[in-house]
Image 1 (spheres, rainbow, N blue to C red):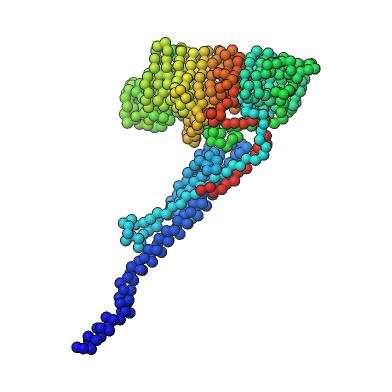
Image 2 (cartoon, one colour):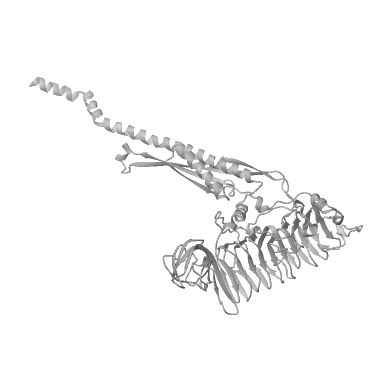
Length: 616
């Protein structure tokens, strides 16, 4: 018995045995902790892999967008922000590269630039899902997702010498010498001032990239006049047409024109035989053209305008027509009729409603929608009037209906009150439309809500119309793809927005500082038979807008004694291919509060280089 007790005592006093027991007890815990640490560290490694994949993918998409932009810089001017096909190609390229680098999934988004908001910028997010092992002891989830994001930006860096001369408030963009047609002459391209008019623009300049043609009797109160050309004034009648086309343009202002309060100090002494002023401290004949600030700029405002010019012609929406105190809207869709059932298979917008009159090939005159079926304004079935024997195969059909008298989901919310009475009040809401024509009746009072409007067609407000801001602050950008006409008691009193909203190719676009713009072109040439300008204002118009008016592809022509602009102290800039004015004209480039694009009267030598780099 005693030996046993002695052995037990020695075992009790043996510390090595105690350590062995402790080690045996905690060994599984230590092993688990090590395994958990290895697993967690593998997440960090996977996250680093995802970061490398996101970086590489963002750079790949950015480099493609850079190459696309470079190839279109001097032609269409489009980039991945303005061209959906290029954007899709960049997205696919980035996603494929992320997948090749181990990402289980990825997303690609075009975002606002970090260095410059208008820069083309692509953001890639890459994810990988890892199964949980030891860590499942602490979490019921079976996996963990590691992710990373990266942003590549095509950074625009301008360099060179800035322009001079101050901000123009009138810019005629066309260069007549680029055409070979004999219909285009010195007297019908650039800026043309007709009759005894007054141009009051003391805080800004008048600039023409070709001719500055004054027919006499004008009064100019301006900061400067800039004409581009090398033909000596007065000699154009002796130069053959083709030679003139090669030679450039003419600055032709009569010596008796009043410039900034004086006609005696215009630089015409000794009096030239042709009676034309070539230059003085205000009038400048320059040898370089001013580029279109909206077509060549990289700011978010310029990009929004470029997007609108490129895509507005592809938008769809209801057309509006008003006459004799009533307004209707119409839209086209694809459908067929079997008996009294109309089946709509494609429609541009959800505007079909009960009461709409249908027209198309083979459709019985007077056929109307009498009830909704499965359709609620868009694709689906509808009940129509007429005989059960009516059968029309699938075709393009036009639906016309009265503009509602209260706001709703029809025609973007637009409605008109007082129809059938002496005064009609229409409240127009932002959105995409077709054409808009007011041909008779009136007076018509149009109240424009703040936002962007696209009219893919003509806008013709030709009979006793008054346009006002619906809100006190204004905030409208109206974009027209064809011709714009305001005639016969035409009052247009709108204010541009101060912020830009660019939804991409779908439109509509709200463009800071721009109140009226368009991508249409003239029919023929000014002064020739059949000529129709892209913008016509006549019948003593009151065109009292606040903001920039921009029609780069055609002629802006205004006739009548009331003329353009509210005063020489309010913002009004006019940019068009050619500009023809008569009557009083008030211009001012004080559009900074509306965030309009600023530029100079002489272009300088600014050039822009581009570099694709990771910025986030």
